[in-house]
Length: 92
Image 1 (cartoon, rainbow, N blue to C red):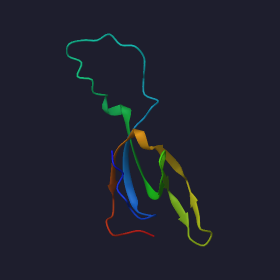
Image 2: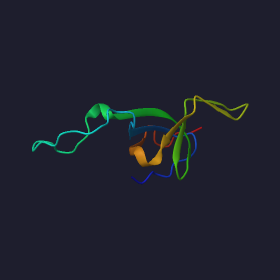
Image 3: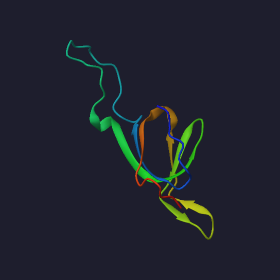
Image 4: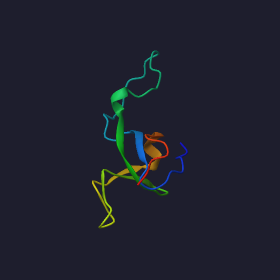
């Protein structure tokens, strides 16, 4: 997944694989398509803070006077399935 280059503060929707889904050894069956169940994926919404080599960071609130992001949320880059800009041409 290539993360789009978006300005800081852009509202985004991020679909990503939750590593805490049920895991373990399974018996293989012929009808197993190898796909994960829908509940294995999470959707997070927030304001883009940064994208680094390991994490994409979202904030849920920004205090402009203090230049402080509140409600920070880090998502591992390797787990991201999709990033969608929610309100094109709008950022703080």
